[in-house]
Length: 447
Image (cartoon, rainbow, N blue to C red; front, side, top):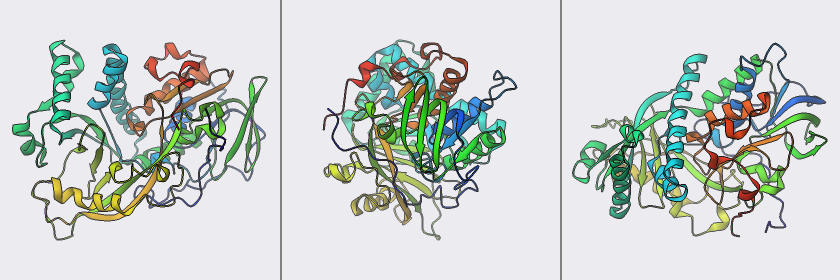
């Protein structure tokens, strides 16, 4: 059952991430001093979900000359949540595909693969179309396995799919243990996967897309916290820190904070705190093997780090969950991104490059920035997408389990069609397992 404690809204004075160290010109922008009295579509949240949804709505060539009035509302600065704090890459994640096949069957796994690959293509397409400078690079990513049993499980899964002639296996390469150290540049591996990936600067991409949204007629209200949403007679009244707004349609792009405004999602979409870092090698260090790929370092089937090399030779590194998982109160159902989780997490980040990468033992690749961010967990490890059950004109896309970059962008195209063209979820092409339903809302996290 839900707890008696009301879910929390975003806190103020959050830590600055590497991505947000130079705030965008729209970071604290507001179209006017108070919100308008009414609008056609209100979008709550200006991360990847909210901005991309508004962009797809307002750039839809089928929308006609009478564009809807779209108002974006953000509790803090623009794009200051998980989108401005994550690892900066998306990829075809075979561990996620394997889990999907195990829990939902092979056809669901095929849908998930298609969805992951669609993100890579769609992100490159929008960057090229809009001419956005966000360091986007089409690359490959290594999934490194340090645990023998985990490596064997992934290899066997891929081999079974190859034997079935599953087309997506053509995108993936298994690297045997005998070759994986040499090919990946990581020591003591038990095997590795090589998959398609894209790396980028997420904050730059989505703040620039936000600029496009305003050019297309959207309105933006940052530092404008929505504290309550009430739906009545098919429209919603949004109470905010800058006045009351009546919206014909409302989109909750609120990820970890969803239950604060939609109480039926309490214990369904639960916030959790993670930690990330930016590492800089010593100025005198010249790497014998420059890092050209992104990485997931799987220490076992439960714990992994993510690593993304930057064009300037620095590194984004996050994860280290085992250093704090034992103390549940500091990370579970926690929205406080004003503080670090603990010193052990940072110490782990400082050790990873020297401990695992060949030729980097003396690089002294230590952190110069560390920050926290708030992700969202769901009981079935799947996002909730679509019309809010029981509502007439409310839609949600939230609960990304730390994998939003692999899921969101094409999802927002589908949400835009639902909101403006009346499309039903089942006609959008999204994986059916993402659909938010009464049945899924009946399965809650255990307290």
